[in-house]
View 1 (spheres, rainbow, N blue to C red):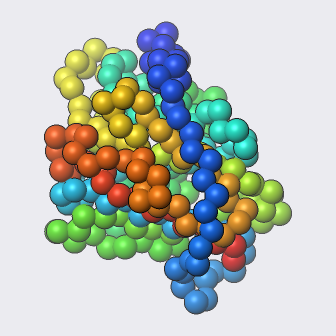
View 2 (view 1 turned 90 degrees about the vertical axis):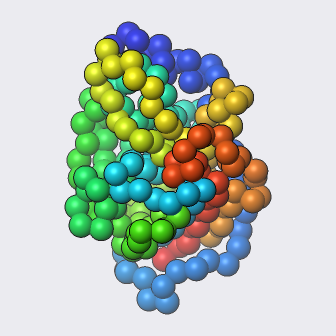
Length: 237
């Protein structure tokens, strides 16, 4: 990894990539007959102030660390050197939505180990995704844990993941590109902090922005990138 990219990640860490260990439980909203063998299902919703634009780029980043302390997690890239152009810190998988992805716009990826977060393996589509219309203001998809870890026995051992949501207008990778980008992620950029979630996933639960006030409204100038609400739901299958 270039020295500048490493420095960027360290700066994020020092800035306090804050963690929320959330353990709320509630009833879940899932299909009556979910696919067998998934161990657990995770549903994610992210809402913006304006509308979802397929020519922009939206990410939900997962770090399958199984670390109860959540010491490392995904953070957005906001300045050069850009690295992969969208995220740094620690993450192992991500869901991406934009018009560069296969039919439907949603695509799940695995980060190839030892590639400086720069090489990704396409894993397929989510189990369910909400279609995006011209005026849609939210993304919603559902994935099974075995899409991350194919062996159900191994998948069942996972208890903790870290999660962040990132919305950006572009994905620069040239370290000499000095053009600013617009980006929003969980947390308040006015505080210089990106806050990812540290989630225990071995119990049914629903996590909401309303319960944490983690993501403020109006923290970026473009409403189509301004994340204003989110929801994460976990249920054993």
